Length: 88
Length: 480
Image 1 (tube, chains in turn cyan, yellow):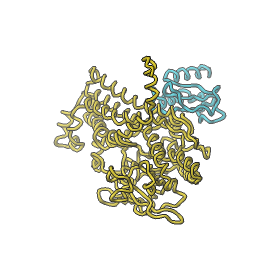
Image 2: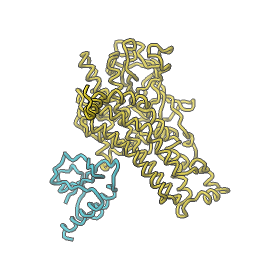
Image 3: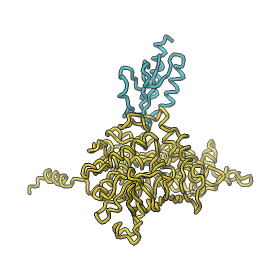
Image 4: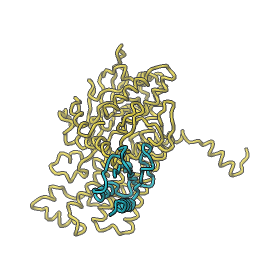
């Protein structure tokens, strides 16, 4: 599985987007390859939005692939979902 | 786009004539007084390269379609304006100081509008020249100093009436291949960290002042330009061996007087030449963009509020209800400033040139608040920090073999926090509220992009009082 990563600009984040993305990468290191958000072969694009304004520019990719990570619990849920899908 | 290292290396190639403490600076980039300000501008390059920040620090050029640093972008939508506000908050919070690059961006956006309008009225080619210049700036990812403020001399007199005609920058000679200008621009933020200087008139002009209605761009090391670096409170702490007493370990801002002594400007770099009827529009649009740009102070406010909370924690005072309430008030005021910048951005509108301009009324309201709230936020920070901030001994005393033990013993707050850390956070609060960063956080908040009265004049001009009175009369049943 290829997972693309996109961030909002983090002007005033309500959670630590960077730490959350690192945690996802660490936990799913063996299940997925992490690529740029504009990689056409990305299966999922995780979009880290620091607050409810959710202003990251996402017009350039398919919303079917996008998964919004808006909090640490969103990040945790994604990890559990991928591990479950991967048969762990 | 340049990396931070490429930006730094590009500055080393410039042959700037910079004076500081009466002497010519031979190595501007590494001078210990100047270096922190270069670090702040460098961060605008570094963050643009990082995926965690590129959404704010980059944009797509409407000319080339390429990814560019947002500081070279011409705003194509209200969303662009909002991202500019958020970028400025981000950089303020990452540097804790004035990061200097916004003025050039605001100048270029204002010129994109006015050159188009001049051409429409007079059939000139300023917009074509400007877009060619803009392409160059975007392609090379340059820092531009937006230079507006003239020394002004006797404020009662128009530029052409001054005893010294150079009190406002003006053309002194016209040649076949360009113009020669003399004068100066004061309070120029980031001037010695800039690749280019973009000059604009400082006020609306009448026909008798047409020699002063000029706008142009030059390389910052053009022949005839001299920089005289401005002093800042506590500036020489940067020359000390230790670093704790600086407060901010990495970043700072600067301003300089930029003197133009018979400087040649080729025609292809001239964007306004004696079209005095457009000087006021250029000034008003630049000022409006730049008043929006004070979202940077929200970011610096984030740092100050964080430092104040840390200081309260280190003192063991964080649970006191008045401390909590003061922190709430600091946040309230800080976010109100953010509201103002976001509002003028969100209510921005498309100009005939295609550029989006902020809502002028709301930009002036935003800046009027910026002239006041940082002072109150700073006052509350000093209240919570306590008097030790301005009485504590130096780093040398802390590290002294003879008396360091007393410093460590008597200036400890909570037992589990080192005295050094307590001193460090207090020095940061000092730096922002009355040290070198107070130049940017306080006095620049007061006077940058126009002094308070300038915004009050604009607010009075922009509001529709007739409509407000009509509504009031209708609701109260008045029939006249």
